[in-house]
Image (cartoon, rainbow, N blue to C red):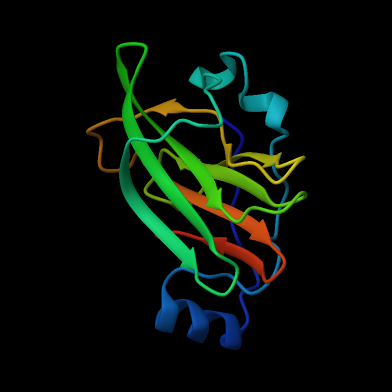
Length: 153
């Protein structure tokens, strides 16, 4: 697993995160995995339809943009899996990705970003869920107003 850890949060960013709990003001620090690092079975991820939706675990709604970024989960190919979805008035160039942690959110693999080419809904690859309390997901997306992430699930 590739580890990712956020560093260098400013006091302003921390205050916004505490107040809103879901929106990041700037780009994530640290490197990210390419979409290809979590597609086609890599690291246990599987490719899914960009129209896939099931049970919503977490969401960020951007009312001014008409966009919803959500963490979904459901049964795909006989296994419960989680994935990120950006839906609504999606614009070309909007992105979605899913962060996956095996240590409670301290370090994570960023699966994506996956970019909407024609303004269509877009999903990340899907990863199996687990009852292990350290196994966590969150959905993130990039829109004209910045980067937005759900809380960990």
